[in-house]
Length: 286
Image (cartoon, rainbow, N blue to C red; front, side, top):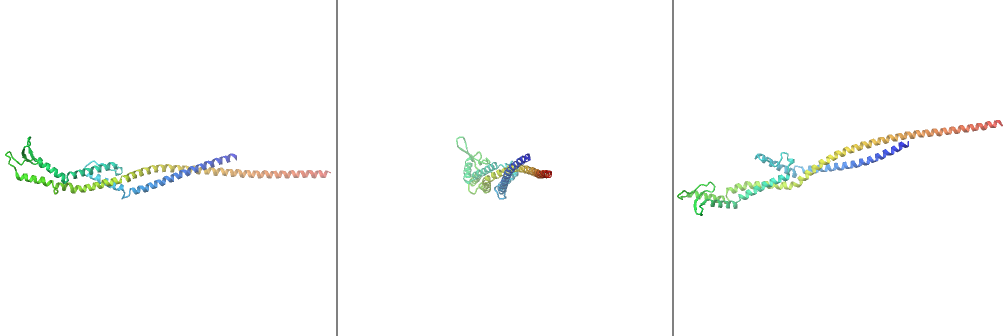
C-alpha cells in the first residue's frame, strides 16, 4: 500500500509538471497564432488593389510589355513577385534621365546654337582662313563651281532652313518636345510612384517572410501541444488507476479490520463464557 501511495504521489507530480508545460506551450502557440493572424491582415492591406504594391506591379508589367514589344531584354522578371524593386527603380531613373537629356538637346536655345554652328560650318576656308566655297553642312552639297559661280537660290534656302530650325517654330523642337513632354511626365510619375512605394514593398516582403517563419513554428508548437496533451491524459489515466487500486486496498483493509475486531469480540465472549462456566462448576462442587 505504501508503494501505491508513493507511485500515486510521483504520478501526480509528473501530471502537474506536464500540465504546467502544456499551459506554457499552449500560451506560446496562441501568441504565435495571433501574430500570424495580424501579419496576414497587414499583408492583405499591403496587397490591396489600391496598395503601393499593386501600383508597382502595374508599372513593372507595363515596362516589361514595352521591352518585349521592342525586343529588348527587360529588367522586369516574368514572375513580377520576384522583382528587385531597387534595380527596377534605377532602370526607370536612367530612362528618365535619357528623356531629360533629349529634351534639353532639342530645346530652342540649344538648337539655335547648333544651327549657328552648322551655318558656320557651311563656309569652307583654306589653310590660311581664306573663304573658298559654300556647301550644305548636312549633305555636303556645294553651292558654287570652280569659277565661283554660286547657286544663290540654294544658298538662300539653306540659310533660311538653318535659321528656321533654330527658332521657336522649329519642327525639331516640336518633335523633341510635345511627345517627349508627355513621355517625361509618364516616366516621372513612374519613378515617383516606385520611390514612394519602397517602404511598403519592403514591409510586405518582410511580413510575408516572417509569416512563413511563424507558420513553421506554429506547426512545431501544435505538434508539441498535442504530444503534451496526450502525455497529460495518459498520466491522468494512470493516476485514476492507482487511486482505484488504493480504494480497493483500503476497502479490503477495512473489511479485514472489521473481521479482526469481530473475531476479537467473539474470542473475548468465548473467554468470558468459559470463565463463567468455570466459576459455575466451582460453585456446584462446593
